[in-house]
Image (cartoon, rainbow, N blue to C red; front, side):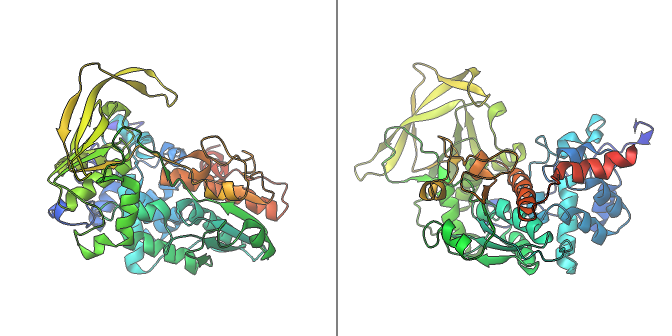
Length: 490
């Protein structure tokens, strides 16, 4: 096949969409996705036709230099390929694993999909990142001359890490304050080891620390120390990047019964226990034989796959809309179904029923049909009268969404939207508190890791200009897309 005179290899290397471990999955928390070999990586990279203006880079929130990554893999120059990735992405191995590349990101825009499979960009990014880690050839971007300015970043998740990486690159002193023992935010605590291994994010955070970012763990800003005290300690600017931690409650009768848990808190607790390391199925949660998970996002999928590994025999995900409206990554859903998890669409519980000891043991559910789009743009679910039925259950996990963490803005009287998001000046990312900026999920609500990183990098750029009193406002998209590719083609 040919596209614009270039020979096209239509099928990507390995199984679609990525190679998987042959080990029994639900017996282990080991990673499911496995890496390409060197030969496979080069073969897959050779499918790239090296578009002069790559649509894949334009679709990447952090504008990762896919074009030159591919060119260098083709030439077996993996060290330089890694430099191209690391230029705009401080969590290359992590994002390679968790980004839904085929859901309107890089791979969805690959021109090869016009004639066959899109290029396996995520797998190749993973290969290069893993190669760099194994070879010990992990290089951080060169740090510019020290400015003498200091920035405090509140929150050590992907948004805070990405902002710290850019600010350190510009020569500012950066300290991250986080209320957990370990950094990583949702990427660490909310994504199970079989999806994103802890060793990967541990390694990448260690490199950020070695590049000069100071870490202060187990400190809650607004409780142990105030924003005013941070300024008094010499910080010239502050970035709030505390993410989306306030879970959305599921409001039906019977929610006060025992055996009903929040799925996100469940994943966080298991991570703190390092359940993936101990391979211990004893947890503070009662995991019965029949588990019901309510929700349609990645947290619902991850928690369902987790309880299957903890011994549940029948795991059902219930979502009130159809497969089309489900926000969870398509291939995460397929992996869940491969592992024996049942997904019921157009249904929802309307009340829970308990036994004489107060433990949930039944759910009354109702079937739904789709109506007109609601405020989210998705078709609204409408109950079908008379379709009620009872199902037997032992445990329930709710995963219907999370909103911004509102503790700090409430404590410090920072203006926020009614739904909790911090209000910012969209051009500068500055909040109503002078010198305090905000970015990521605490502003926009729950989103993809890489999109939170994009917003926080934009905020870091504005903070840099604020600290240096620069009249030149740099657009990172123009810097890492237009100037890389459009100028050359012109």
